[in-house]
Image (tube, rainbow, N blue to C red; front, side, top):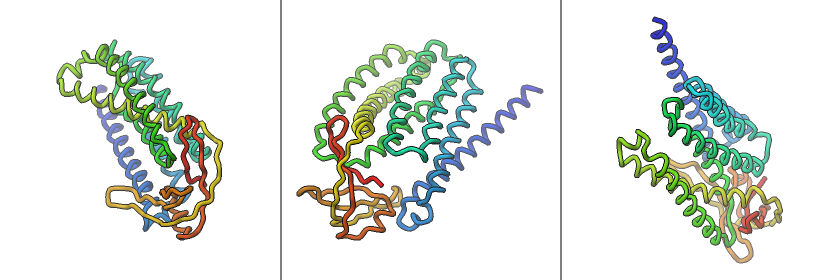
Length: 299
């Protein structure tokens, strides 16, 4: 009787958590979409909604840490759960109080720590799979950090940055070889992969893709986050452009001229609407910590 009651309680808690996640993610998606849309940015593009979205993300990560903590049977699994999820919860919680560059550094080191924790947990799981509770959400949370860092990297417009792809590709190849070697040697015999060779092949492909994404993200983030020697340039707005659609967030950009080269630069919605063609704006040109120079609009 007591066991049935406990099962009912756990079932209700799981349902409650799922409802909380669905509502939280829906609100965050609405804020992200309407906050940069052409027709609703005035209402959503404010500090209240920024903080609300960040608080919801941090709260969902915290709730997930408690939920996974209760399911773990091994002490190491419990410690991993609390440190892993709350590492990211803290990263989002401090976002309103620090600059974008400092946040990129924080996310970068959080991602490195997360990958190390995931690798350790994976080896523990391979040794004793019944003692460690692991789901797709653990690597998915690390992917969230990658997405955040890639969004930060996408704000940069490189000047002659084609050479950056050389270390990106080289780093991706090296990481892929190392990751596939370790994966095939230690993890291909896990029961999950024994049931289907298709799952094993798909996992190897995803691992290679993930390694190249990590290579790009690491190089772009280091080049951006650890460089603070900027030159302020005043450039004229030659044209304005909005890119929008039913399945994408609206983006705003100006066409400008740097030297004798015409290019575009992404800007916030409020800057787009308050600036007319022919006016001048100030942008910043950075040398890049790794030598790949870029320009970016910063408030």
